[in-house]
Amino acid sequence: MATQIQMPELRYGLSDLAPVISEETLNYHYGKHLQTYVNQLNTLIEATEYEDMVLADIIREAPAGPLFNNAGQVFNHAMYFEQFAAPVKEGEENLPTGALEEAIYASFGDFETFRQLMSDAALKLFGSGWAWLVQTENGSLKIEQYPNADNPLKHDQVPLLCIDVWEHAYYLDYQNRRAEYIQKIWNIIDWEIVAARMSVR
Ligand code: MN
Image 1 (cartoon, protein in one colour):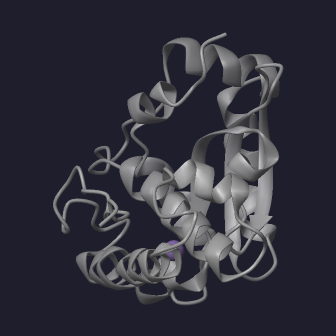
Image 2 (image 1 turned 180 degrees about the horizontal axis):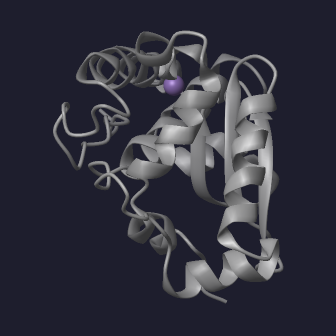
């Protein structure tokens, strides 16, 4: 039997992201929503040409429809849950450093401009989907809005940072207040993880 697509392991405890993301939200979002995408993907690839592919190749090869949607959502959520750490203390800054900081300044002018643009992209995305910071083929950084399960791999971009704005990501903690969820999420970004995703050219 082929290797199945696995659940990504969390790098923190289920209560460690509170109050930005509660244990209850992680129980549903990681434990139920993501588990369901993983289970559905494994069912869809079983005994097909996709069975032995790595996830990124399934995403690149899959036609639009259930296979792409489940593969995309497994990938997107793996990126999302990997990029977090316990919230910084009240009044402390949480900022990128090194090559990532330089790339953000080169592409957006300064960090605050970038943070505002990415927050707006997440806030204004209509319906379900994801806001992304991506690295393009020429190495510059760009913000994208992709609906539903769509993601940067399908557009030949390197995915660096994502904000899930499907309602299941924030409804238990923030109800309809998507803006507040987006504002708080900056306190739990692990910038070293994000920087490690950059492609070196
Ligand atoms: Mn989600």
